[in-house]
Each structure stands twice: as structure tokens, then as C-alpha cells.
Amino acid sequence: MSKELVFWNSDSGKADGVSLLRNALSTDCSKWVKLSRDLDLAQEIENAISEGCRIVVAAGGDGTVNAIVNALMSVDEAKRPELAIIPLGTANDFAGTLQIPDDVNEAVELIRSSHPIPVDVVHISGEGVDRYYANIAAGGNSVRVSEALTDEIKSRWGAFAYIRGGVEVLSDMKTFRITAKCDDEEFANLDTWAILVANGKTNAGRITVAPKASPIDGLIDVIIIRDGDMIDMVQIVADNLLGEFLESEKVIFRQVKSLHLNSVPHMRFALDGEVVDEEPVQFKIVPAAIRMYVGTDAFN
Image 1: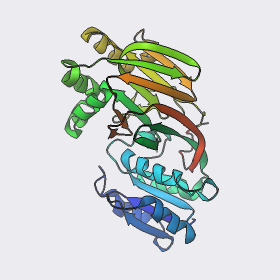
Image 2: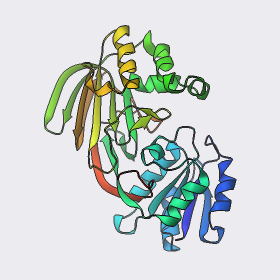
Image 3: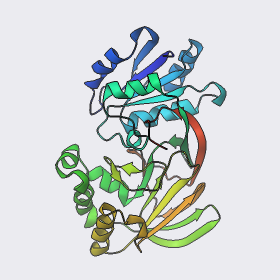
């Protein structure tokens, strides 16, 4: 196995899996770095590259993957290391899209026995924001629903947690009037509840919200949920659970390379679970940005 740089998150949902990971990886060719707020991830990666590192391992959840993806994208493409994900978080949504096993030993076996493939990421930009994400950006009331979903609610309600989270927010649902340009197609003055800009399929704990999304197709899936009343909200959630979400008359769905967005009032987004207060204006796919290890049958 090539030399690895392992970033691990002690606050992840399955942090006890780190000891299993240490046993599974060849320790003589691994450098271990504990994630912290003041850690310069990009510099750690650059230093590791100079020492012969070819694989960066993200041991944690979607937040860990998000941080490492941003650090990797700051590295020159010609020397950018490969990325392996060991899903130790609570949700592990992007790992699910890549069909990476939840079992630590099986996830490590992917690094040993398979070859990485080029995977897309999404670049967002706007006033005060310039960064990347791998899975899903959820804007509008979706942010508020996500913030209402405690680990206890997700554990108790499972796939129905979004209904519970929606109920928490429903009495004060906000309407956002947006203008959205999906490639060359423009939607003006739309009253909306939420926008999802997806590279992966699931969000908020393996709940499928973008069933047609693929992180290797060179496209982002834009899902605009128009506003309505309580009955509409319940119907949208029910349609999602039944797999008919994208066909709802309250949903606009496009697969595009870029999205330009303006909203009144200001629309916050959660990028792979991390809330960004600055409003992204431009979303753009970056095809084949990082070579990643994926499940055996992920994209066959």
C-alpha cells in the first residue's frame, strides 16, 4: 500500500473505530494527524506529499470529508493525492453514495485491492465565500430543518426524521424569492422554500433527496422546492419517501454544469452539514477533481 496521511476526527460519531483503523492500516507507512480547528490541513498535505504521500485518508463523517476535500483542492492537480474515506461519522452520506462499506476493515480493503477513480466536486463562490463541497448544498428552510435534527431525533425517527424536523420548522417556514440560472435556462421571481444543489444522493443521515445524482457524471442536480402550505409540505416529504420526489408539481429539477442564484431574503446553505452564513451566488461542477476509492459496484 502507498504511504498514507490519515486525518481522524475524535468528535465523529464512531470515533472508537479509529483503534480498529490503526490495526487495519499498515502503521509503518501511515502518518496520523488529529483534526483540530487551528490545523492547517493544506500545509499538512503539502508536507506529506514532499515525504512521498500518495493517499490521504479521511477517517470521520461528512464534515471531515468536506474539510479534506477543500484542502486537497488547494493542491496543484498534478501532485494531488488520492482520497480514501473511512466512514466514522454519524451520517456518512457521501461515503454512502460512493458505496464505501461502513465496516472499517472492509473500507481499508478497498484501498488495498482497488484503484481510485476520478470524482467530481462542486465549487461555490460569492461575496465572502469561495470553497468546495463533495455531497450536497442545502439552502433555505432545509438549513433550518437540518439544524432541528438532533442525533436523538435521527436515531429515534430514522427515515422519518425529516418529517419531524419539518414539523419543528413548519410554523415559521420562510419564503425565499429567487432568480436561478441553470446553465442557460433562467427561472425568475420564484417563491421557494428550499434549494438543493447535489453531487451525491443523500443528506441528513442517508435520506435520499437527489436520487439521480452521480458524482462522476460532470453535472450538479439542482432541486428547487417551491413554497406552499402544510399539506404541500407533507406531500413533498411523502413523495420523497415513495421515490416520487422529483415528479412533484412543487419541485423543479435540472441537471446542469452551473447554477447562478440570487435570493431575497438572503439564503443560507449547509454544505455537507456545515452551515455557511454567506450566500453562495455561483455553483459550478469541477469534473474529475479528485481520485477517490469507491465501492466495488458503485458506478457499474
